[in-house]
Image 1: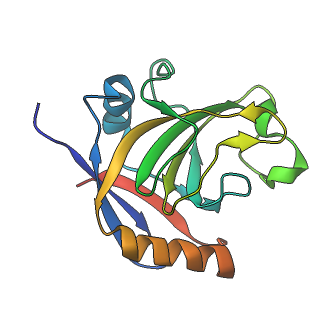
Image 2: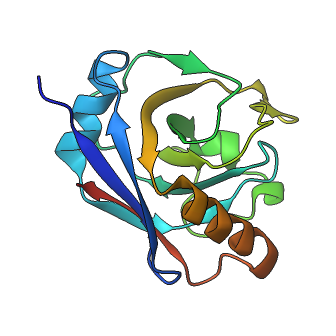
Length: 164
């Protein structure tokens, strides 16, 4: 199979990066994601994992991918997939006012843009993610935009994933 790439962008900040899908390490996740593209949603900046931005989506795979190529210590440029039951994210601490409801499942697609991330949540413990992509171009500009998002706020910003 030829290498496949996705573009990850912050729409309002007009910044993008390109990531290679890790088909050899997370084939089930990559196939589900590729078939679902394009995807876009409100961006959030992580509270617990540190240097992470993400968007939440309804499930798009026929069944949830297994925990392939897992990590709890993502590195800069990692793209990760998480799946959460609504009850796991339902506390007020997370600040989700539209997406999270009991009985729902949400997919979290995340970009890690700097070092020293630890996927440990005070409410639920370790939260391993599936590493499905690695940024190969544009990470420095994206990291600058992510830092601006952290300092200036995420309201009105959209995180987009599309085939490159």
